[in-house]
Image (cartoon, rainbow, N blue to C red):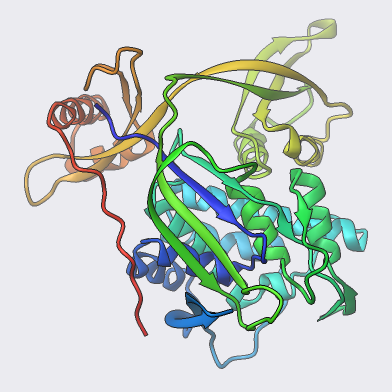
Length: 423
């Protein structure tokens, strides 16, 4: 039987910031060296990570401390930050998550200051430490299997906090304006307005908006608990973010849910631009998107752009379609859908010493027979492996699926999550 999809619950009732979420994920078992490698791959000399054990409100926790270069930092535009993300060592899912986080931040800052997202000057959220927090968290979520198809990640209400916070724009009320914009765009819940000070940062809110869905504790078998501490030790409540990691224990193979379908008909776009349009729509939060060729009024050829997304990110997806296609109208509808439980399994293909890793996507069968679900190799990884091995892509795909079926026939132990700390 295939391994069950990953599941997680993020408790942000006392607060969440990028470094707090990163520390909680590391404390729950994410590979610290993999995270360090992802941060180093941003190409910023002197940017790094160290961890230290701490106590907040009498509770043991882990702190993630970003080591920043001595050189003076600078404000960046969205394109600058995404350039660093694109060149990083993150996998496709990690890059997609980090891209969506920064897209959410840019759109929120743009809405607050009344300018397009592309023109926003990132200050705090585009600084060295914030880039490391986002990319490090993406790497940790990847390592824990929480970005794979079928993984379930939910989060509590975010602590609103109270009072004021100092920023590049002066003294701002708490919750910060960007936090409220992100919460509104993603449908996040806010609570805990009695807590003093800034409890949820824009980076923390954007990470939860991109990685989790608001809701209660998912049905799961708990494997590990991670606690990430903030910089202050507050008296009213431990200044921590908690992450509970495990495996989904939902019994149904088929799951019912809602999906929002966003569409636009475009007949005047340079065909060479469509790949960048699809990339931008996915970065805005769409689960998937595609084009369907049509012949419109007066025999004019065009494309119907269709995107599938969750309702809370519909406006962000529509905004990306408007911005990148120049269309004059976008339509949407709510639909029901039935999805099969899915998971991803990494297998090795090729001769010993030069084998390549390829991910196989697996949809479980209704009867749960091991190895007999629908299994498909990730095409992008298969293509990369084919180039490295000198094999046809078809042969790599077939070998990957065969290797998966051979592995699935052997009972496998659940991955053991270990608490990792270092100083």
